[in-house]
Image (cartoon, rainbow, N blue to C red):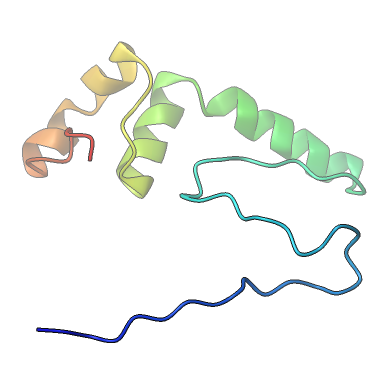
Amino acid sequence: TAYEVGYGMLPYYDDVEGAPQNSIIGGASLWVLSGKTDEEYAATAAFFEYLPQPEGQADWASFTGYLPITAAAREQMADYYAENPGADTGI
């Protein structure tokens, strides 16, 4: 069956210097922005320390569908992968 396809510009704020700009496709990036509180930066640092650990990678992979980056996290996810066949295959 045929279907109609369209396209358009991404929305942007006129007051942002250099707008419009390209987007990052896929969402596989983490950003830390300026102008936040010390408490927010401390929480961000704690998250960035947690994320590459086996538990953090296992959580991230099971929540997002991404694959873990370490063998230790992969091993930790054995039960998850047994319960979710195919989830250990990158697409």
